[in-house]
Length: 119
Figure (tube, rainbow, N blue to C red):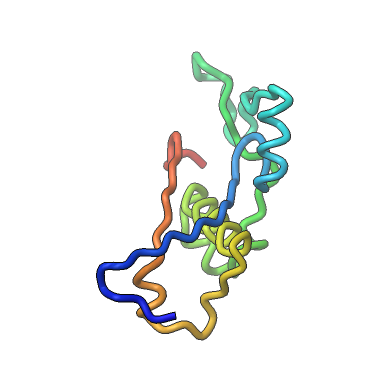
């Protein structure tokens, strides 16, 4: 397919890493069932904080989505962003291996985080 400069195509894939699940299916099932992802904090000792609950992502393993060395250099929220983006690409069925910069320059992602700097 050849596109003119004024034509646009939007292709959407979804990827979720959240306190309700680490896949779109897990997340959606928990939402539909009315589950809450808010629990007592486990990633840090909350005993000195007035609020001791948070929406943590339990058992997140960044090495499922990237090399150990790459993960070590990133904040946990960045690891989850990369994981979500890779899940979205897989959901769409797109591989960036062997693609030129022209394709990569035309791909975007929308990310959100509640607090990116906590462990």
